[in-house]
Image (cartoon, rainbow, N blue to C red; front, side):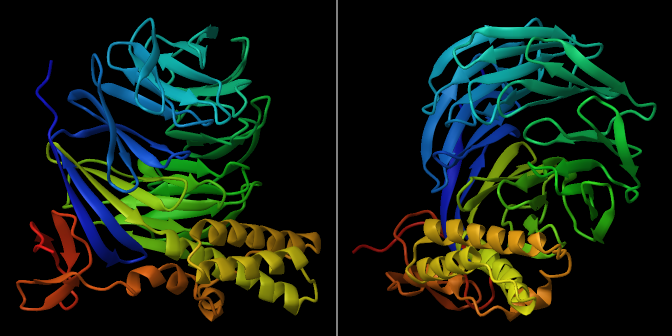
Length: 478
């Protein structure tokens, strides 16, 4: 058994970019598999050299810790709850409940390469390094198995569990719920990456160019992408397709038409599309950036973690926080950033840009306007959940109104139109923070004195003059 896992947590009270840093943790093992749980928002973190698995809340609390037989190589969160499927080194597949308690385990024929859980819950699929694929129910019953020509390093099971897409370095396959391979496509240039919709009815592969495959596996179209493209991502409905390299992002529409290219630094393998918004989450050594589908920088969240040699990953908790995970030497650094006020502010600004275009074209959208006003009122009252929900509805109804009259939405949401909106959502949602009374003061090395609002220690505080982060190890008595 490996040595005890040690870690240190630092509470934070520091605005930085679009986020407010809430806590920072350092574990003495390099990071391994990660997953976000969205029903009860949080992070589950595994390690390359440790059989430990830990779950952290978005508020920085340790929810549970579990030591298994060997390190976890792949994680998939159950879409219907906060349970997990964990593939261990050596071939064991575990089902854990929301408290980290093992419910059952299943032994694969050989070590697992990938695992995927259905978004609606009820099943998960795993591939092994001999080409085997199994689909298991939530109770651990084998639903079906299949044998592919080569081990699948990528798996995506549809949200209802009826089909799955599997890919290796040379080709991609669609497998039915009975284990039958419906089609297989091979590519002479191999496959660098693959993305599917939540229903697995639309698939794009990166093979020299980006290629779109139909439900029967035939090629619908191909599109050239910038040099250095290393990954592809797609929104759950297939309407937004992104091609990513370390320093460039390009967006394609569902027909393969190139819409825009942006110079954006990222770690392509860790990029994701934020559910419900079609925005692209770009982790990088510098932190987390979020780009909307028109290429605007919606959120920019610098990280306080030191530069490292490991991959940077950023996971959205489904509510308001990002977990930025970075490997630094032999340790895992986790930074949690609350983007709630900035996210609500951005969504309202984008909805407002659509609303002004509806007014300009003489196409009223009663539902868009109603939800816009409800969102603004909720933000002013400090109700984040209602502010974001209504902002998303407003955004959607305004855009649908424009689409009904065949008004293209490209070119409506721009930096100028976002800046023109008279929105105070961020100000309203942060009102409680700005109205706080300081509990004591901390002196920075530059000589400046900063107010401190929390007694939780160790606490990192940002200097109001030089901007440096300093550590408060103990708080004065009441």
